[in-house]
Length: 143
Ligand SMILES: [Ca+2]
Ligand SMILES: [Ca+2]
Image (cartoon, rainbow, N blue to C red):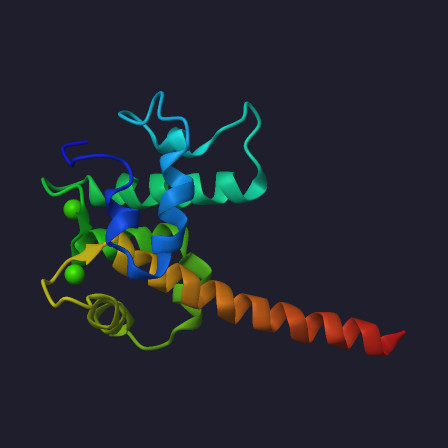
């Protein structure tokens, strides 16, 4: 990784600033090659694994061109077609990728940074959680 350190992304994300103090206490043994620095124990918790997956998936696609810190539109398309295929299929509009790209690219540089990317994941997670709540309520009333 050419950037200054593993916590740069998190430092620059306004919403995650409270997490910074905690993060600085994380063990940093092997972060140069993987985001495993997040994992303090031999067996990562579900949430730690999810965080690690998020970082790994982002970089698997972001690293395809020379600029590993950001997703180009092509990289974003590949990521979504592979990792969010069912979501993408539910979107009938062929211009979806363009729209998502425009929505995500908050600073307008034509690339999607990790910070910008996580807002997509957060948005989708919130939507999924709402569906989950409806599902829970339905199963509860059936009884
Ligand atoms: Ca890239
Ligand atoms: Ca951007």
